[in-house]
Amino acid sequence: MEKRVRKKRKKKLWIIVWSIIGILIIGAGSYIYYLFHSVEQAANEMYEPLAEDSNSAKKEREEKLSHQKPISILLMGIDQRKGDVGRSDTLIVMTLNPKNEKMQMVSIPRDTKTEIIGDGRVTKINAAYAYGGVKMAKDTVENFTGVKMDYYIQVNMEALSDLVDAIGGITVQNDLDWIDEGYYKKGYHYEKGTLTLNGPQTLGFVRMRHLDPNGDFGRNERQRKVISAIIDKATGISTVTHFNEILDALGANVKTNITFDQMMTIQKNYRSVRKSVEQYEVTGQGTPPGQTYYLNVPDEEKAKVHDMLTENLK
Image (cartoon, rainbow, N blue to C red; front, top):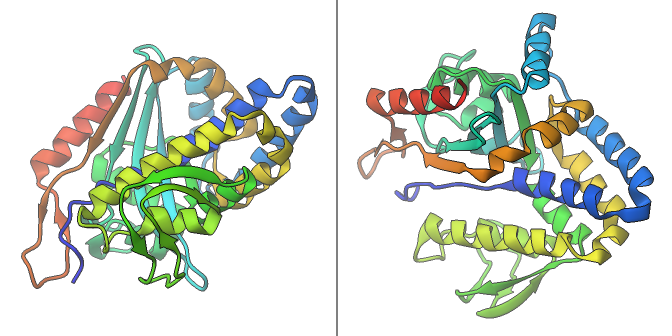
C-alpha cells in the first residue's frame, strides 16, 4: 500500500536549469560570444514542439511574448527508468505576469484522481504522461485546471545527477543517518553532518522517503538543500570550466517547446515576476486505508485553482 502522506512535491529542477544558464551567460566575461552560441546550440537541442501545434496557436504565443502579456508554462519532472516511458512525478502550472510582477506556481500532486484526456480512464494524473507523452499530460492538466498551457518544460530526473556531476559535486548538511537499501539498493551511507555528494548519490539523497520519519516532508527538505547547493556551486568561477558538461546535461535531459529566441525574450521581459512568487499545492481527500491511494479533489478546490490561475493571467 502506498504511504498516505500528502505529497508536496515541489521539485524545482526548472530553477536549476534556468538559473545555471542565466548565471553562466551573465558571469562568463570574455567567453560571452562562445557561451552565447553554446547556449543557443543547447537550447536548439532541447527544443521539441508539439506536433499538433497550429500556426495560429504559435502566432498567439508570439504575440503574448512580444506584448509582454501573461503566459502559462507546464513544468513536468519525469522519473524515467531504463525500459520505462516514465511518469510525471512533478506537475507544476506556472504563470508569469510581468505587469503585476508576479510568478505563480501551482503544484498538482501526482496521485490526483482525474480523467486522462485522450485515453478516457479515470486514474492518477501522473499516468497521463506514461499513456500519451507530453500531449496527453498537457491536455489532462488543461482539463483539470480549466486553463490553457502556452508552453511546457519537461525535465528528466536523471538531469539532477548529470548536473551535479557537471559542476563537480555538491556539499549539503544531512540530519538523518541512513543506508540506501531501498528500491535503488545502491548501498550509499548517508551519515549525519556535512556530506559531499556526486550525481548518483545526490539522486538517492533526494529520492529517499520510506526511511525518513517525516516521509515526503523530509524528502522535500532535502530537495531544497540540494537545489540551494547546486545554485551556490554554479555561481563559482570554476563552473566555467565545466560549461560544456553542464550544457550536455541540459540538452540531453530537458525538452521544451520554447525556442532559444523565446527564452531570451522571457529572460529579458519577464524577469520582474521574481519579485513576487506565489506557491500553492492542490489539496483534497485521500482514499481510505486498504485501497489504492488517490487524492480526490473536490469541485470547490478545482474552482479555486482555476480562479487563482486565471487571475494571474489577466
